[in-house]
Image (cartoon, rainbow over all chains, first blue to last red; front, side, top):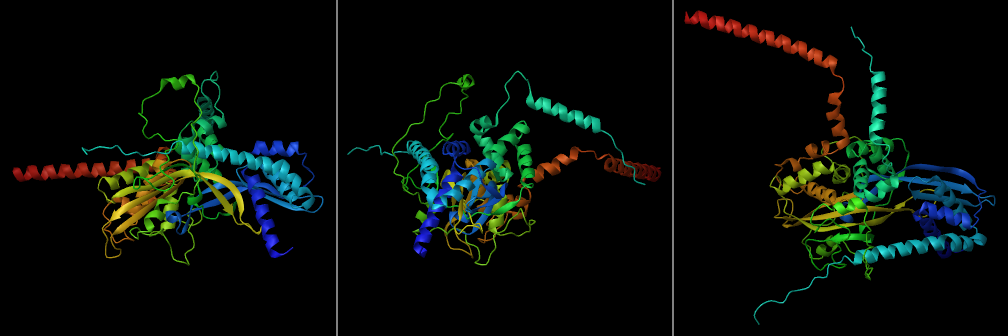
Length: 154
Length: 369
């Protein structure tokens, strides 16, 4: 595998992990159960909850500053086949972290990737895209349409 | 000799039991659920997250429930909880220009790209109580309209093209981002530390200070360049992965205050800026924060420091409501020994005072005779 392919694969994995992190916990649990996703995994780390310090930038684009913290739960799982998966997500749901780490490990096995993509990631992405589209449309409906009143004598 | 006085264990235990009872209130009224607080008291939850300095809606809602709706007590609970958790790292700085915007208004440009999006605002409501709400009326679904989905540049980027507005705040290349949760406060401080303190500062305190600048105590001629509310993605660099991992999204409010500035020995006439960034939907707080940020830059911009809002040590030392409530409220705890000592002192001073008066009177009488 050359460097370009490697980078593409990394980008795909990053997107897959992002979909897992942003998933509502109940929905992820339901999809994993429906997919009959293996629960035979050794937990190498966690699931454990900690904090991240959240950074912004002065003026929006200037020097970084810390403006608060957020709870994050992470896990690392190893499958019987040796694949190691990680998960990080906002919040304190340990079962979500465990399932996400297993899903990430399965995703790295090329023979299981399509199954994880189709049965877990695709529905999560679709739900997120739909929720975002609705949110945008609801916000767009509150856009001010300015109009000019014609006045004067001519 | 030091005499320890003990007592009150039973009284304290019973007081806490009574508190638990009063918190729950009438048992025939259904108990509140966390999800009800998260969904229906969302802005109170946001305030607890912002001033508790911890983004976790369910925890903030639990704190509100446990504190009987006393938000400063809830903020205290959240701050205490924070200290029990390990720190995984610092996120990459959020990009507010890439926000999934829920509200965005500008008071300086009518026709800015992306437009004026009012979102779920109290503005333009008539502030009339609605008794109907008590009967849980059906609420209509929001209207929807096709959006253009274009990236909404921050208004500061638009003004920057004319060169009449200062750039986003930069700090020296070798500056390490400060963190008030790790190092004690020292004055004077850099703007990054000040903004961290302001972001967790008490909304009421910052609001009053911001208001004071409008009323002439450190006037700064402000305009809201932009307020935006929405969700931004968080990313964290971790050693085990070759890319920054996405943690999910948080809702933030950002305020770009734009201030007319006549120039000084240090800077030419231009628009200067104050910045506000807080967790959740907290427009008033973000605006107050940006007014205070600008006022506190007086020294940097060569302005005279004449008003409380411009006094960094005064503002930052008193903006944290957990510290403030701790010191004010500790006054009600037993001070029996301190007070006894003061009582003895006042008695002695009084008797000396009386003696002095008596002898003065005697002298005056003798002089008169």
